[in-house]
Length: 101
Image 1 (cartoon, helix red, strand yellow):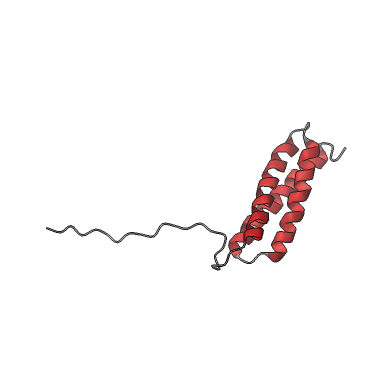
Image 2 (cartoon, rainbow, N blue to C red; image 1 turned 180 degrees about the vertical axis):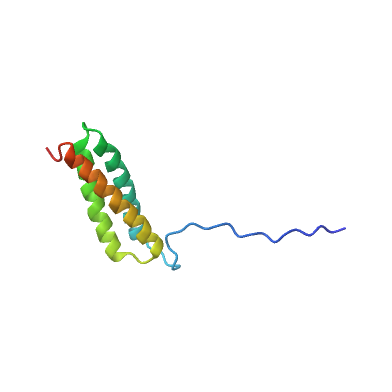
């Protein structure tokens, strides 16, 4: 007696390269803007680490803006926008607590 099995469902595939091409530099820039933004957000809330938070916020913001101009797929753009917003808020918090001084 044969037991029929349901057809295997494909697993969801998470990728930033939805166009089928590789974009290693853009993916790295998107990852840096998100990670730099999150770290600058956390450090910006600490009044003792405002200098590092401000620097990471500015660098994440600038790299995110440049990556946004060169992005090729919608998934990259969504991740970059999240990083830009997080970097901007982290930079603002760092500047509010003392900035570059």
